[in-house]
Length: 214
Image 1: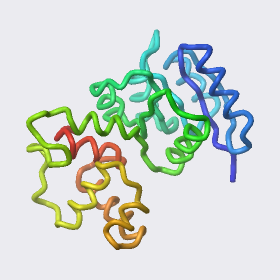
Image 2 (image 1 turned 30 degrees about the vertical axis):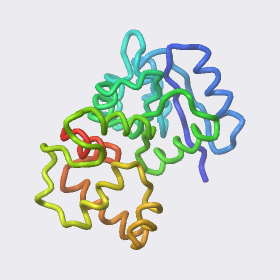
Image 3 (image 1 turned 90 degrees about the vertical axis):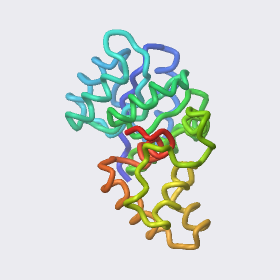
Image 4 (image 1 turned 60 degrees about the horizontal axis):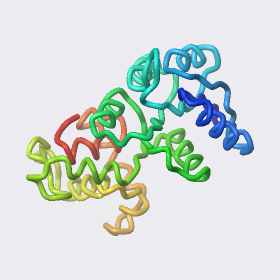
């Protein structure tokens, strides 16, 4: 396969250099640029056409939330948000602006590379503990139940089962095994559900199901 072209945007030299070293020693990746803020990342992207951005949230000049919005609007690449802050509001802002995933910076090198590949291939990713945090945002609602603002009327029971499993963080393969259907069928269901809701990826669907907000 062709190398996945990556731009790393973080205001910490230590973080940028560390991630660059991790990716440079792997033949599946090519780090085509490093930036200390969102504005620099966008400028690099216009010159080098990356596949995936590793984007910190809190940076000077232009933060990762605003940079993600511009990157998605101008179709400059896919964004994987990286942060030390598991702030629920920032998670929602990043997803609303089109980020394909969100990871806390406590990952192993292999986990990081796996998540980049998932985003590159079109699969949204999110740390399980962030989904759990979102699931517990409204203490009046039991974990895993639908938020009152989530409209379930347009879905069959099978579709609702799929949505619930997505919100639990299960992969297509895991959902297929649990519901005794094929992985292809699960993928078709999710594609249809995303289309109904006008959402771009499964992570945003999970957030909508758990919080009632898009």
